[in-house]
Length: 74
Image (cartoon, rainbow, N blue to C red; front, top):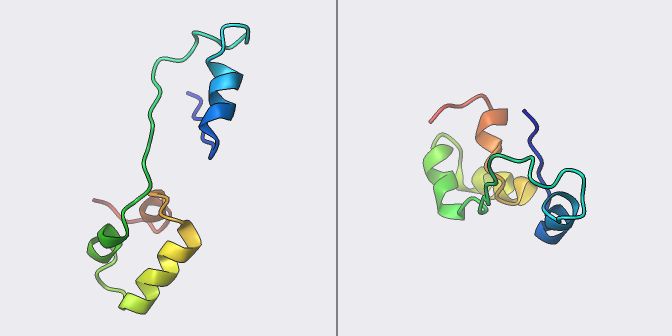
């Protein structure tokens, strides 16, 4: 399994979904993930003070992987 992530959708499309690229047609699934909503952080990090939640969002820019890195489950 290969998982690719980039902030530039255009770069990924040109690199992997363009007909002239050798990797064209080799992907099974493409997911377009949206940033994590700020209000969700208060639910997920309920043990943190609001100031700390703001810091988490500032550092991660809303990337959902934050929970996995902290070792938390749903």
